[in-house]
Amino acid sequence: MKFKRLMATLTCIISMPCYALASGFMQQELAASATGVANAFVATADDAAAALINPAGQAWQDGLQLSAGYLVDYRDSSVKLPAGIAPNTGSEPNLFAFALGWMPHDGRLGATVAYAPAYHLQNDWGRFFGTKAGSTSLFIDRLSIDAVYRVSTTMSVAIGGDAYVTNMSLYEAGAVFHDRDYSTFGGHASLLWKFAPQWSFGLMARSGAKVKLSSGTARMGLRLPEQVQFGLSYLLADAWRVEADALWSRWSAFRDMSVVSGGVVTMAHPLNLRDTLGGMLGLTWTLRENTQIRIGYAFDPGASRSIGFDPIVADQDGHRLAIGVGGNAFGMHLDLAYDYTFYADKKVVGVYAGTYRDRRQTIALTVSRLF
Image (tube, rainbow, N blue to C red; front, side, top):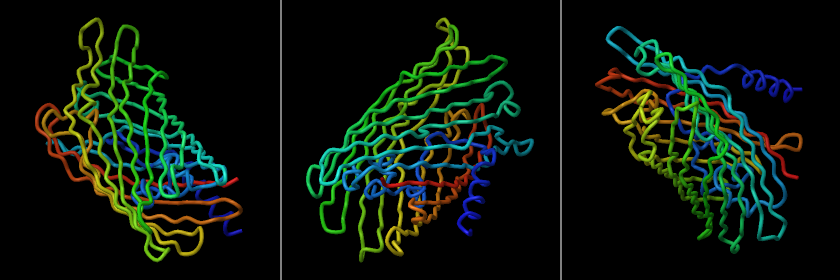
């Protein structure tokens, strides 16, 4: 009865409309087990979330695993102007992620399939910057399919492809640009190496991708960044696992969100983004078999520079604190996590002058089952 009341409460929470005033872009929260350790998970990858974070981790998980996750982001984004505080009135929906992994008992070759949000952007500054910024809605989801190979008792690799689904809407000065794209593809490769007792190293490298959008005679081209995440994990006394990860993103490749029609720029949004290198640190305590308590910290560097800043992609350096729990119930495994991100204020001069402020909270719930 208590479990039913708990699930009813969680269902009520996650089914609420989410008015997350977003200024970020890359969706990092993919599974509750990873969220609980601030996504320091690439060298662990020991549950169904491996398909989302590091598919090579599926090599040590026998059988068929299925997981579904629900993510709720609450965000408070605003800019301080001489006339007062102007909120970013963009809103974003709740997010869903799905993962499937298969590895036969005593086999070497397996597979994973994952569908998750990759990049989500919702900003609306139009009322405070006039027609210069307008409102932007960009959703990019990713379907990934991997082949997993266990090289030895200590090493596994995976290689796969990515297919992206893009939905873009840009409103500015009475003009509208809207399109969907289903023909963007990329690839990735991952590694999990247990190079010494209690130690493991994980690596996930993903290629960039070119998104081509059109609306009538208008065109927009987006270049998604290459990404590399790598980490080192250590298991202490079979109960405590600590992991440190780094995530590099080539945001300098994402140079422009301008709209061009007939060779003429009709909506000008050149971007001045920098490559970023973030860090994550997570600690997992296995209280008993299949029951974990997790905490984590991450530094998320912002890609937007103060010079050439465009609020269409407004982000700042962030410090993220996370906590999570996981355990078995009724033949399933449940993971629940919460994180809070504090973003340092960014002072900008020029066309979009002001002091940009941001806060974010995430609730993540994942249900998985081994068949």
